[in-house]
Amino acid sequence: MRIILYTGKGGVGKTSIAAATAVKSAKDGKKTLVVSTDPAHSLGDCFDIKLQNEPMELAENLWAQEIDTIHEVEQGWGVIQKYFTDLFTAKAVRDITTEELTVFPGMEDLLSLIRILGYYKEGRFDVIIIDCAPTGETLALLSFPEMMRWWMEKLFPLKRKAIKVAGPIVEPLLKIPMPSTDVLDEMERMYDALDEMKRVFSDRETTSIRIVVNPEKMVVKEAQRSFTYLNIYNFNVDAVIVNRVIPQSVTDSYFKAWKDIQNKYMAEISDSFSPIPIFTAPLFETEIVGLPVLDRLSWEVFGDDDPTDIKYTGRAQQFTKDGDNYVFTIDIPFSQKDDLSLNQKGDELFVRVGAVKRNITLPRTIAALSVKKAKFEDSRLNIWFGGGEDA
Ligand SMILES: Nc1ncnc2c1ncn2[C@@H]1O[C@H](COP(=O)(O)OP(=O)(O)OP(=O)(O)O)[C@@H](O)[C@H]1O
Ligand SMILES: [Mg+2]
Image (cartoon, rainbow, N blue to C red):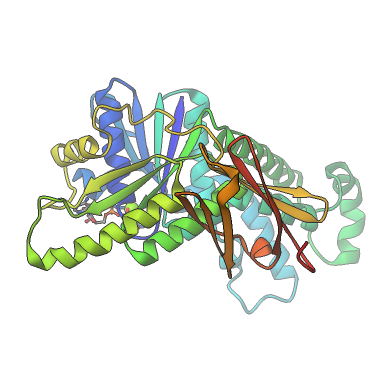
C-alpha cells in the first residue's frame, strides 16, 4: 500500500501531476484512488468529469474523489463543535460568530485526511494519491495532530474519569459546561485517529511527499521552505517535480529569455533538493484536461518508471538537539571534507563542498543562531548551531 501526497505553491500543477500519476499507476495494474482535499476542487475539471464525495471509477483501476470538507466537519466534528459552541457562548465571546470559531484552521483538511486514512485501513486501494491545497495549508495540516493534542491537553487537563465525577460539582462553580460523555468519546476517537494518522503519514515505507515546482524564483523559494519543514517533521520527501519547463525544441526568440530564466532556476532547484530525485514535465501546448493528455503528461514525467516507487529512501536533511545546540545534518554523498565552505545569510545557508553546492532555507529557530562547528561523518555533514559567541 502506498500513499503519495503532492504539495506545492498555488497553481504550479499539483492537481495535474497528481492526476497523471494516478492514470499511470492505474494503467500499471494498481487499484488507484486520486483524491483532492482542496475545497477549491479542480481534480474533476482535470478529468473533465463531475466528481463526488465518494470514490468514482473513471477507468479500469482508476478512481477519483473530491472530498466535501463541510460534510466531513459535520460528520467528524459535529458533537465536539456543538460543545465548543456552548463553551464559547458560556464565556464572554458572544459578539463573535461562535460557529466560525469552532472550526480551527486546518480542521477541514485534517478531517479529510482522517477520511482517507479510513480507505487506507480498509485496504480498498493499492495506491492513494492525495492532491493537497497549496503549500501553507498542507504544512499546517501535517503539524496539526501535535498542535491539536497540545490544545486538547490545555483545555482539558482533567482526566476523563475526573471530569465525569467532578463535572456536576465543578460546573456550577466554574460556570462553564463540562464536556459530556459523548463529547469525551468523540475526543478520544479524534486522539486515536490523529495518532494513527501521524503514524501512517510518517511511515517512510508507506507515505511519501512530492513537491511540485515551476522554475521561477518565488515558487522555488517557497518549495525550499516547505522542504525544510517537511524534513523537520520527518516526512519522507521522495521527489521534486519541475513542471512547465519550456522544451528545448522551442526556438522562438520570445521564449529565449524565458528559457534562460528557467535554466537558472533549474540549477538552483538541483542545488536545493539534491540528492532527492528531480523529475520534469514540459509546458504543454494545451491545458491538462482529459485522460489522453494526462497519460501523455505521466509519460513525460516518469517515462518507463513506476510512478508509485518510493523514489528516495535516505534522509536528505535532519534536525536533532545536542544539549543546548541544534545539529543540522545533510546528506552529501561522495564528498571530500577538506574543501568545505559554509556561508549563512539570514535564513539561508550556502554550503559548498568542492563542486557540490547546497542552498538551504533554515527554520526560524536555527536561523537566529550561529554556526558553532561542522563535521563530516559517512557522507553526512553535521553542522552545530548555538547561541552566544562562535566557538
Ligand atoms: N505542464 C503543463 N503544461 C500546460 N498547462 C499546464 C501544465 N501543468 C498545469 N497546467 C495547467 O495549469 C493550470 C493549473 O494547474 P493545476 O490545477 O494542476 O495546478 P495546482 O497546483 O493544482 O493549482 P491550485 O494551487 O490552484 O490547486 C491548469 O489549467 C492546468 O491545465
Ligand atoms: Mg489543485
